[in-house]
Length: 135
View (tube, helix red, strand yellow):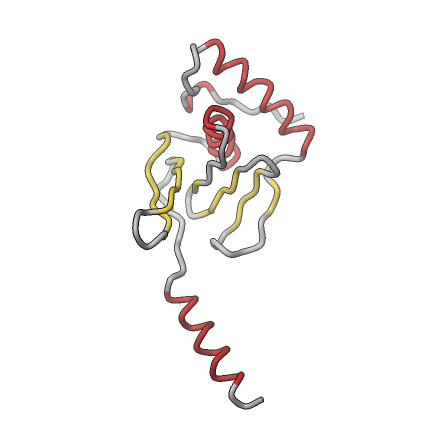
């Protein structure tokens, strides 16, 4: 048993060395993709002047609806995970995911996004076209 502890400690140290941090530039919604070669996340700006994490998640959901695949990203230091199953956020890449929208809320968001994308001839909506109404 004494050998397991040093191995576990070494694995923990190595895992923390590669810990990715989310970009924290104010008001920028980022999209992430695995970089070629090492598979580490690479972030590219999706939109500027985004007012909230929820609005960034909606923009990433629009990307998911348009492409048919997951569209993860980040907003002001938080990771955003968007796939067919959920829209969630976490403060660390491997951290606990917190739901951004509940299923009925997401259905309403998706309905509005599909309408906006259709009205724009298949183009994604801009950050200025995204406004969430809280009920």
